[in-house]
Amino acid sequence: MKYPKRSQYKYAKSRYRVRNWAEYEAGLQRRGDLTVWLSDAALQAWRAPAIGKPGGQRTYADLAIEVALTIGMVFHLPLRQTEGFLRSLVQLLDLDLPIPDHTTLSRRLQKLNGIRFRRLATDRPIHLLIDSTGLRIHVGHLRKPPKNRAWRKLHLAVDADTGEILASDLTGRRAADCARVPALIQQIDEPVAILSADGAYDTAAVYEAAQAKGDGHAVSLLIPPGRDAQLHPRPSAAQTERNRNIRSIRELGRREWHTNSGYSTRSLVENTVFRYKTIIGQRMRSRSFDGPRVEVQLACGILNTMIGLGMPDSHRVV
Image 1 (cartoon, rainbow, N blue to C red):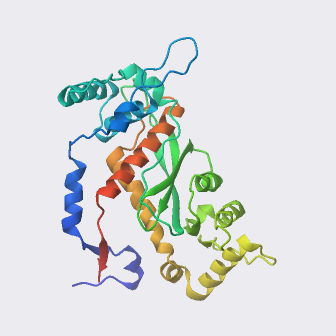
Image 2 (image 1 turned 120 degrees about the vertical axis):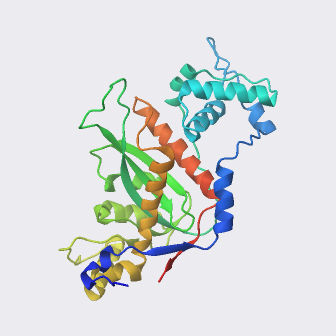
């Protein structure tokens, strides 16, 4: 075997092995299961209640629209095919349910709110991983996409222990990554113990927002400072964590600090980004700005559901 040079260790590809292959394989099979089960509570909440005001009343509740759009995203169906899929499904189940047409789905998509991600029950503080990526927007009826295609920025906050997406946000491409951290943290109900992010989040606003989510305890922030970062002479509670990282990097070196501090766990949020673009897709379907925001929330809920079905437990093979 030809070993890489010392200067090539950074680029040597690591080998990993899955420990729970039987459980993970069963979870992959369950992802393609077409078994449909609708609870009595879901059937009763399918139709929208009367609002008691004059004028036309809504036929479908937000639950019905969310179910239809989720099915369309899982199977990558356009809105018309989603409508036909649901109609055939209702016939097979012998149910008397009205099915929203594709026009209603397109219109109600922009008005959905309050979508909650599926979460595994936990009572422990969270190790939060934050990162962002780009998603291409819909190009309409252009036969050839433009070279300088516009895109939106997707911000994700992921639980390091479970891999679940805890919060998401969609902004314009010029929005700074660090500016959306307070909005992401506000979506999380549980206290945060550790926050990991890359150097783009090395700002005072990020440190302060993270410390405010510690529920009275100090939050450990694993954010690599810049190469020329200096110690703060009179650090606040938030800046103390930054000073600690600077000292540790000076003593250990940057690469050694990545391993010893646990910062290397941040790669899990990059895995989540890869899963999003592989399973959901790299572009958005809705042409308005409010529509893609709802699409992102539905997509995050789908990925969390797949995590509940089974995830690989891999370890590095030396």
